[in-house]
Every structure is written in C-alpha cells, then in structure tokens.
Length: 435
Image 1 (cartoon, rainbow, N blue to C red):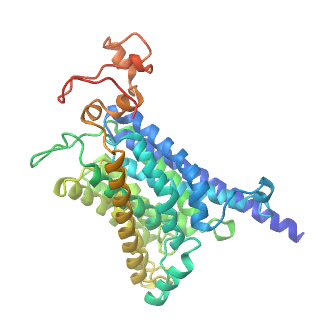
Image 2 (cartoon, one colour):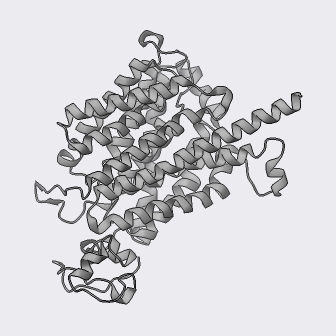
Image 3 (cartoon, helix red, strand yellow):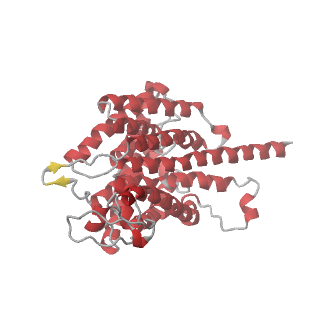
C-alpha cells in the first residue's frame, strides 16, 4: 500500500510538471505573436521562424549541456534507467526548466528584430542556453546554489529568493538583450541626426494575441514552479492574477490608453511578481505589478527617445529592468510589515538582483562582440531594406499581394520566383539570398 501511494504521488508530480511545461511551452507562441504584431510586415515571417528555431536549438543544447551543468543530471543512460522509480520525473523536470531557459533567446529576439542575421543569433542563443544561463541558474537554483545562498544568508540574514524567475530568467534575458541591441545598433532610418523617427507597429491584434497567450501560460510559469503537487500554492496563482491586472490598469493610465502599453503592462506585472509570488500579499502583488508597468511605460519612452536605443519590443525595460524590480520587490513586499510571509531580506534581494545585471551585461557583451567581429551580426543595408522575410526566407507574409501586383506567376516560395524588392536607396537591388 505504501509503495502504491508513493507511486501515485510521483505520477501526480510528473503529470503536474508536464502540464506546467506545456503551458510554458505555449508561451513561446506568445513571444512569437508579440513580435509579429510589433515588427513591420516585411519582418513577420522571420519572427515566427526565429522563435521556433531558437526553441529547437535550445532543446538540444539544454538537454546535452545546460541541464547537466545546472543540476548535475544527464540523460545519456539506458531508457529504463531514465524512468527509474520516479516515473521519469527528472525528464519532465528537464522539459519544464528547458521552457525557462528557452525564454532567453525568445526575449532577445524581440530587441534585435528586423536587422539581425539569422544564424549568428541562433548560435548566440545556443551559447546562452548551453552555458551562460545554466551556470547562473546553477548558482541560484541548482547544484552550486548552496555556497552562494549561504553567502547571501550569512551576509544579509536570508538567502536570495526568486521563486519563479523574475531575475534568473527575465532580468537575465533583458540585460543580455541590451548588450545585443547596443552592439547591433538601430534600424536604418530609426534616428536621423537628432530626430527620432518612430516606426509604427504592424498589427495590434497580433500583438494583443501574443500578450494574451503569454498571460495565460504564465500561470504555468509561476504556479508550476512549485515542481511538486505537495508544494502547490493558491497564493502564487492569485498573486500572479493581481499583479497582471495591476500592470494593465497602471499602464492604461500612464500610457494614455495606448494598446501597446496596455498589453505589455500585463506582461510587466507578471514579470515583476515572479520572484515573490509565493511570499507577498495579493494587495502587495497588485502594486508590484502596477509599479512594474510604470517602469515599463516610462522606461520604454526613456530608452527610445532619451537614450536613443532601438530596442524594438522594449525588452530591456520590460524584462531587464522590470525583472530586476521584481527581485527587489520581493524583499520589500515579502516582509511582514507589508503583509508578506517574511524570511526574505531586502539586502539579499538587492545584491542578488544587481549581481544578475552585472553577469548578464558582461556575458552578453562578450558573446555579441565576438559574433559581430567574426561571423557578423547585422544584415547588410540591402537585405535590411528589403526585410528579413525576403532576404532570409525568400517569401513575404502576404505573398498574394506581390502576385496581385504582377510580380510573378510562379510560386513565391521558389527562390527564383521571389517577389522583386522595391527600389532601394542603397543602390541596385540584389537577388534574395539565404543568411
């Protein structure tokens, strides 16, 4: 009887974590449509292909290198040994944590959209998911965490707390993206002299769809971070909800009804609450999410117009700065003074959050400078003007429009029949080519 109960419990944990993994996997469709709706029509196919390719490459490298580096567990043993007495719990745990790791290139993708070469970014993502992210993951959540957390506890009175990845995932991705955007430079025409030329989004419904998909999947991201049925928390679910709606309402007011700010405000709230979702009171979660949305709205405007950084989806303020805020906020609103459960230190949260910023900036700068100076990171002027859809994938998102203009009677997907580009200010158009 005891054995049967134990087996049932482990089966429940496997199912619980598998459902969480599927929900977070679905979030990558949200990343894709958020980018599709924000970029111009000539870059929409590229957004979809990038996210799926990055996911696939991330799966392989995290299976082979990243997960073993973070947790000391590898899967190069017979299949019977993988099942063991846990019904393959470590396998589904890999699947779940892979979904977190694969968020890193998905976040970066939104910042560098429309002017980055395809394969160099895929290779950079492999480096992040295989080495850079899992090493940091191991320091906070994994096999190297004991010494690091002991340092935080002895120095600040409590370990660094990041329940669902405000810092480990989102801050890391956002600050890595900042390094990429700075190395890459702005899109052609985005700034001219001292003048800013904002580039409008292409499809608000797609942008909104991406936000909705992400928001729904986020309950798997946060709630299933418990990783076992025994540790599941209704507090995490309600705090995620309250932070999301706080983000929406604060962004609605601060962004003056702008739909882009409203839908990203929901994401800002969810990013901010990840770290302390198991600690804070729902009222505190509402304000954590609301303040996160304000950080995004004003941070995006500051980034674009004051610093003149062409971060297409605003992933640095949304994931980087708001993720850092989430780590710090857990140390504020997690205290009993604000109705939290305690056991957290503001000093530890501040130090851990800033440590992630420094690590991500250094690692991102190293990888992208090497990529830029060796194989090259940016599309040439002609390909950027034509757009990555034609330059890289040899087809547009709306090929029938080209056919209706009399571009060709052959299938547009054939390389020889790709629709001719519009006249370019950079000289004679070149034939489309793969990146």
